[in-house]
Image (cartoon, rainbow, N blue to C red; front, side, top):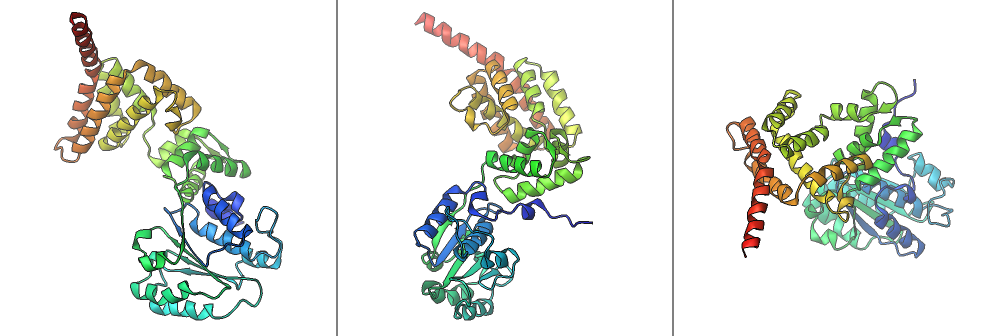
Length: 381
């Protein structure tokens, strides 16, 4: 039986063009290779799972490639590329600073730097989680980082740039990696699903991308989980929300319809249904505030791109936003936000949310009365 390889490893980018959502980084690195302006120390910063170590490995492979392509990518056919792909390259050294953070570990690395590569142009040292090094280890590393041999290149990667001492920062060329956009993650998940002949619902992939919070590695882990959970090679929206225990946005549309109809009973019954499914009241409150925000941005065509949802969901938001006034949405957002802030201190948290729903159900009438009073005052004036 063939061993299963997780998607994050199986589809790990092997060249700059396949890196997802970090074009500003890959373009700069390719231009540095093209113009022979390579720094001797790089610092890759950013959240987890966005491609820091991946880009470090691609850079290491490309600068030692014997036949760099016309668009400055590694050829993947020369001896250097083949040995790198087989994890047997003598010119690329990786150090995990989380478990090798002592002065002795850094001194051993500094000793290695003294020896020039027997084959190839550069020796590359990738130090992951570099913020975990002790102060003594940082200090032992300083001189080598400032004046390394011409053949040595250091690539440091960290999720916590603020923990790195300024003397190290000043010696590095710093690259800040962004959180990956939901649309980019969704497109990558589609690509993998098609490669693996997995049928999918686009809304499910978008939900996975949203849940990953900008980290592609997290998205791929969730993707593998849902595929394993589902019956057969398919990913459905319903199975995804069940597995990730996410409250379906359909509930928020139903609650908002009930509030606009001024039906306290209906809104309370929907909230009871949500609680019976095991969802927390605070979770519902946060989701309701987000729903009102989505309705507000749907009212103006200029802000619709701020909606990170599928076309069908966008249409639902547009339709419901036509029924709601801007005054209602602003007041509802303010009230739900205040309720969110005071939720933890409430002794009866269910009643706390129910009281908000009761107030919101009477809000359309209050908004209408305020509009009538304002109009009447204008006439008298």
